Length: 417
Figure 1: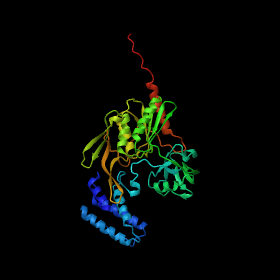
Figure 2 (figure 1 turned 60 degrees about the vertical axis):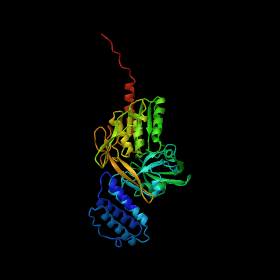
Figure 3 (figure 1 turned 90 degrees about the vertical axis):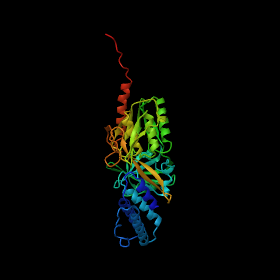
Figure 4 (figure 1 turned 180 degrees about the vertical axis):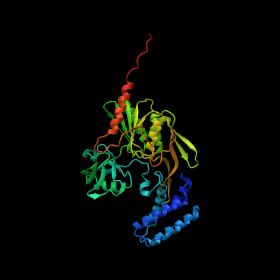
């Protein structure tokens, strides 16, 4: 598994990584896992790998070191150590579209989340040192009924501090048998709150659409999976039929997913043209164009709402809509996590995602991937704290109202005089 992953990264990654980068990361991953399995610092080999830059002789040195770590680790699980090596190599690329999924997580890659029994939220960890944040409260769930809000921080579960745990670990603590209770400690601004909820089964919807005050349609897209583009297309048609004069495409908290879904959703609003450019490891730049099959010929004022958790395909949608002049982007700067990740099956049943292209803005040519990059909105509206309501949505609706009112005024007739 480690050898297969190494070969894929050497041959396919857009940044052309060196053996030194990959194998140093691999060894770091192995040592960390070995310590979890009971190896002491004194028992582990302490010297470096003395890498020379030769692809396969360097890998042979790493392989020998892996065997030495196995010997030094009580109850060693070589499969887990190899997976840690793959994870370490992926992390060494220091960008968000190269990562490893073990077999249990690989089977759900780019699939709609199956129904779960929990409180009804999606969560993530915005940074390694940050507490878990509620990205979205699912309508009709215990969390919504209890008053949990987007932006709330989860700090305890059943009285146990979870601020240092990873997203998956916290999710597993919150989920449980349907009807059972769980107490969640929430930090909202400076206020600490406690909610005791009975778990219920729920699914994360592909999209949610609502009409605001009779003529502003809002479409929330939490993730780009499955048939989401068809669902968004149907939502646009439904809102248009119900009299929407303007639309809000709410991509806040959308981590992306399927690239084709991103293209198709942007294509609902962009008749023709290039959404973004892709550059491969050969340096050649190619356009990523619209899918004309999805275009809906009913142009209306459009706002795309984004925030720091809008990533990947969500950023491509926002960039493409803005570059083609059919919508205004509002909110806060996006994640700057934009690239094309190609999935590669590994011998252990896991999946390695490898970044094979970089993404540039079609209008400005700016690189969108990396710290401090991403999409800077046309109109910046600060991220709401969970106690403030939703000023970003309010600003989008107010902006659209001016556009709708302006478009509804008949032009003055020209008269000869």
